[in-house]
Length: 219
Image 1: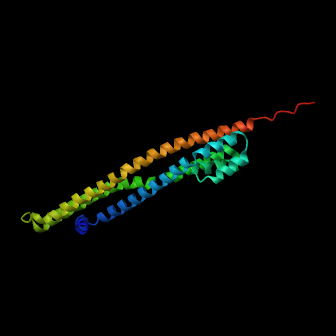
Image 2 (image 1 turned 60 degrees about the vertical axis):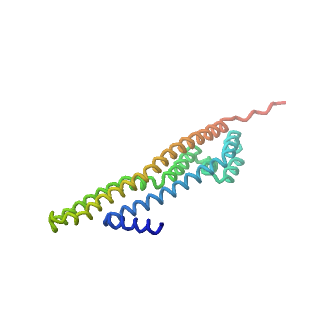
Image 3 (image 1 turned 90 degrees about the vertical axis):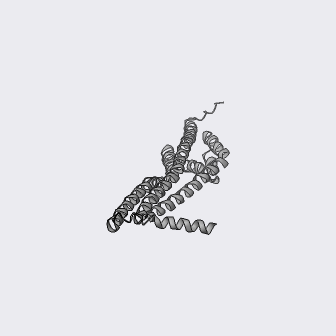
């Protein structure tokens, strides 16, 4: 059964003509990016959920001005958000807010990696399908010109090429569109979450720096 299905798929691929090769490349590229981004978001979400209690502890220690303890706790947690906290605390003398913003942007950029390629696959795949449609129709007219209308069955190969490439391009595009929209929604949620947490630790740091020591009472 599996062998027969594979043989049928190979036959359909061959009937699709040479345009099927770039469509196949687009499908493999899109599938690879979808799997890699799915794992990246899963790893990011799991790490932040597992160390969410430590994130609150780091913010509390920062509010109390215990930067060394907060830094040590942030470095011990294998979480992207804790890593951002650690970078900001370690380079707080150079600029806490600037370091926090730059490190947060780097994290968002890593989550966004591959989006442009996936978007390109969604756009290019149906265009390749249209290209296959055009080449199939051209082949059809070439066969009809050579054989004449007395033998129209020779044009079926060109028509099949046109239909197969169109369908293949649409399938690849639609198959990548749903994961892409899911990843975009995930990125928006993670960005909003990150903005809230970085705002909390920034307020905590500003609160700790504004605390003034109480002068000793003269006896």
